[in-house]
Amino acid sequence: MSRPNPETPSGQMPEDLEAPVAPEEVQGLSQNAIVRKRFMGNTPALVSIVVFVAIVVMAFSSIGFVGIPGWWHYNYEQFSTQINGGRPTFANLLNWGDHPFGQDRIGRDYFAMTMRGTQQSIMIMFVIGAVGGFIGVVVGALSGYFRGWIEAVLMRIVDIIIIIPLLILAAVLGRISGSAVSGNLATVALGLFIGVIIWTGLSRLVRGEFLTLREREFVDAAHIAGASNTRIMFKHILPNAVGVIIVNVTLLMAAAILLETALSYLGLGVKSPDVSLGSLISDNQEAFSTRPWLFWFPGLFIVAICLSINFIGDGLRDAFDPRQRKFKAKKAKERGVHGSAVNDSVSAAAIARRTEGGEDSGRHGTSDPDDDGPAHRA
Image (cartoon, rainbow, N blue to C red; front, side, top):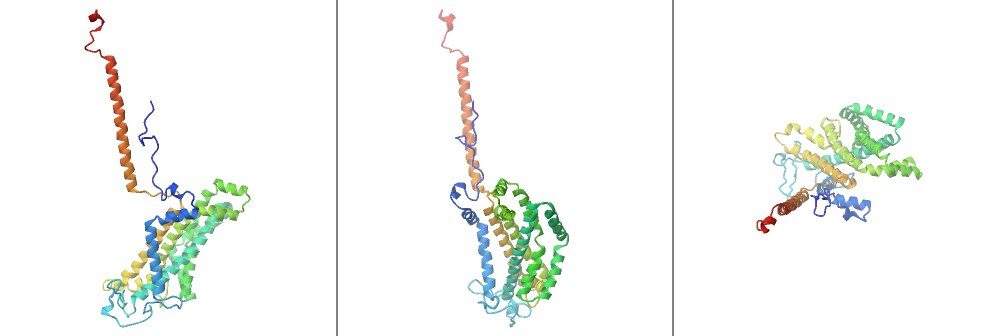
């Protein structure tokens, strides 16, 4: 007798955990459309994009940038008389007051200073992400694809950079960049110097991906078709490693903000009279107990930027990597209840069959009391 399948009445296996987009919903769509559809279904990533874009727009439009005036009536270098002891005047979204984030100890508008610090942090973040991401991908791709002496030389360079404490190396390079140029160029130079040394972790991850992907069948097919090594690396292998790269570049950018904050806190990053989020916290650390808002607002923007970048990176990873699956508790619970009901019905049917079989055997093995038998009838 065939064994009943307890999964479904028709004997079919239950569907797996639901993917970000069901297969039938992506049939006929291009890869870009599939990625876009998966990403649009990730609520935390979409919320993070809105928050990050709002921060960028507010930071660069409020006090202006590179000579373009902003809509806020103070700049980060302008002094004014302290109002109400420098406390924040923000009441609600429709009533900001003259100094919504308060004033520092010498009367400068803290909203303008925080926006300037946010500008600096965002510029450094993107410069470090671009420079560090480019170097890490190139070094990892070359070492993972070619192997041999190329891999040995590049990985030894990576080892040498890794053994040097990152904060010390970044502090030395930050000091050099700060003394060489000033203004926005100093910020870009700081990002370039930090980006040159922060790519080592990314290069190792990319190397690992290339070591795996270079053994796949599509790479052999590209070799047979006569494709060059450069085309195979960056046209065939790199798109398949884009999920790992994007996630780690976003993590790199989030770490860059924290590193810049640490350098500025130590006085080795952005130099006065310019400001950054880290320098704002450093300059006002003694006022934490008396004027804590001087800590709250720079810290809030640091946390908001880092979390937004991380959530966006997670959403891009889920969108690019089809192996990522999204667990939904409600769906799993429904499948569990359905499976329990099916199992109960199957068990009841089996018990009923055993009961029927026992009754049939009882009828065949027990004589009828009304039947007198052959001797009695005789």
